Image (tube, rainbow over all chains, first blue to last red; front, top):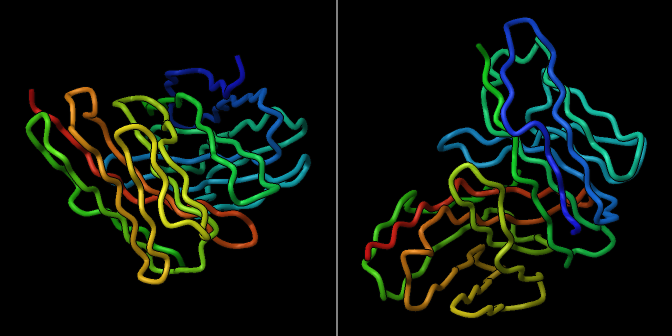
Length: 114
Length: 112
């Protein structure tokens, strides 16, 4: 089945560690996105990419990094510079050729700092 | 900067009631507006997408309307059921870089 796969579902990070969240899509979408969701805060955009080997910062990019080496993959690294990383992380994708295309989300990854 | 507001943050209704969820946005230069459903601990599922040139979209018991000039959208749920209990988010697509801006969502509880 076509869709977006995020892994792991649950991840624990120690202070000072970098961790990477995986996002893979087989929908042949060109645009991919990473959002962070905190209770009562809604979704906030971290990074997005519209083509391979190109990406742009969103509203809260500090302490995060991404890469887009393949069309189907958009991993997010949460670095030790992110001081409050405990949150629910959502990856999404869509075809950006027209504005009428729906955005699809993965099932999310929970990151907790221990 | 686009801002999306959804009020109230939570709503509780008895089963069978028709209800309206509201969404407002500050910049009317949008490409489209989407309504999503999110169950606890899960990703978002798209319910309806309204393009900027459209006034409404319908899917089953759901109807979404868009008034771009006033910066408002409503999601109408007919004959609500306990299975409709979830958080409903609206999002607008703006800008040449296709940025999607979300509201904080409305958590709906439908009581049996």
